[in-house]
Amino acid sequence: MKRVAAIDCGTNSIRLLVADCDPATGELKDLDRRMQIVRLGQGVDRTGRLAPEALERTFAACREYAAVIKGLGAEQVRFVATSASRDAENRDDFVRGVVDILGVEPEVITGDQEAEFSFNGATKELLGRADLERPFLVVDIGGGSTEFVLGADSVRAARSVDVGCVRMTERHLVHEGEISDPPSQGQIAAIKADVATALDQAEETVPLREAATLVGLAGSVTTVAAIALGLDRYESEAIHHSRISLAQVREITDRLLSSTHAERAAIPVMHPGRVDVIAAGALVLLSIMERTGAAEVVVSEHDILDGIAWSLAG
Image (cartoon, rainbow, N blue to C red; front, side, top):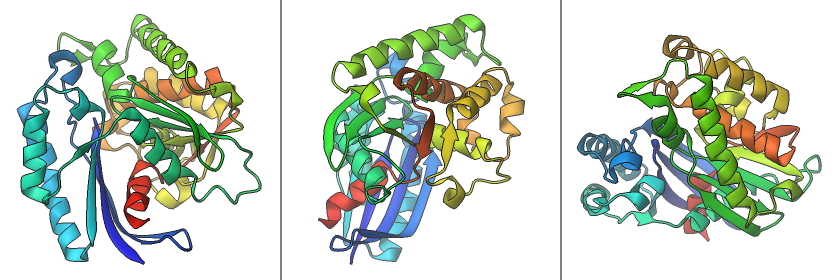
């Protein structure tokens, strides 16, 4: 066993996994897995810069994570930064802050690297499942981008496109500084058009319709699954490897798009940081299912974070 720490810093959230990994058996045992909504990508689509308050929220989470990593005695740490920090003009401020706190430099990875980590993290446990046909299409719906990865035992094709729950919300659902509550039909149509264009781009590289099993990752997907399962609180074990039908995703998406902030916030499984962006995230998921013809999505709690951990354990 090798004890490692993986950090995934995305547009909306920053997550930590400290785990014992055994490359010989393929076993990964969680010691600590946690997440904070920090909205690092706040305003990046509009300004091209990371906001000072977004940086401070992120650094505060890093200080907490540094204490956890030290307490558990991880041998190696890898910090992967995704979409928002790829795009920002002042990304050097972000890099310096992370190095000061954690002692490791964040790796601002490419979309293709991000996709490979997601695929490995999501499918390692699924390879032996007789009830799931291959190839898998792993879809990681983040805050600023969505990754598509097709493969059976390994990655065959991958593409990252710039649609995500935060980016779509900020681009289409914010009017005069306020989020539309609920959005208009015109705003919803604008998101659908953006997602359709992104799916066209993804299909230039990844044959989306060849997928036999759709595997969905990240907070938008797991939150939709938690709602579909009728959970009173967020339960990772119940959500992990649940299978949510197209009809359920469509019904929940319609419900979220027609609800107010207060109604979404009252959903028991809703993380406070997702209240304003979940409707756009659900619409991205629904659009993907309709494009690929998937009758259901297999939901995975294991994703890029697990892939990063495995990259240290090899």
